Length: 184
Image (cartoon, rainbow, N blue to C red; front, side, top):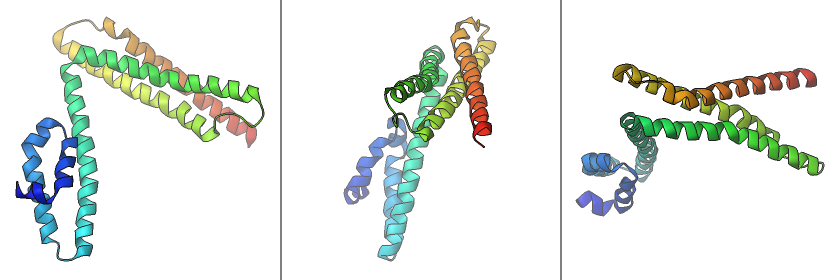
């Protein structure tokens, strides 16, 4: 508890960890930080220690939350499948909406529109993310249905989003290739 008094800010930051992880490792993390800071002989080395702690803290918090989400999605297959459909569909529709807005802006006057790098990023990255998410959810669902012997028909929407995203991504890539060959 003495470490928690010395490192109040770090002790508060531990609340960013998932509750189970924090309860299991919180005191140990505080003690490790205290030992690392106490063992640093100079102020410069203490700054280096805090820098390493900060980087490790950010990475570990993200990793633990991703793992917690993954564990949750494994236990809640039906809900996670629905969630994956909604997120994949949003990722699929986002670049289409952006392209429509960009077209309207371009028609409203010269020099208007969404920057090209933003269009390229969204029109390429969003379908890739939609394919990855829906494909992963389909695979998980398929693996779970093989074990339980239930039907895969409930996942037709995930398959449709995955297929549409794949077709859309292919069209975007072909359009980028066509544009590049026309301009060079």
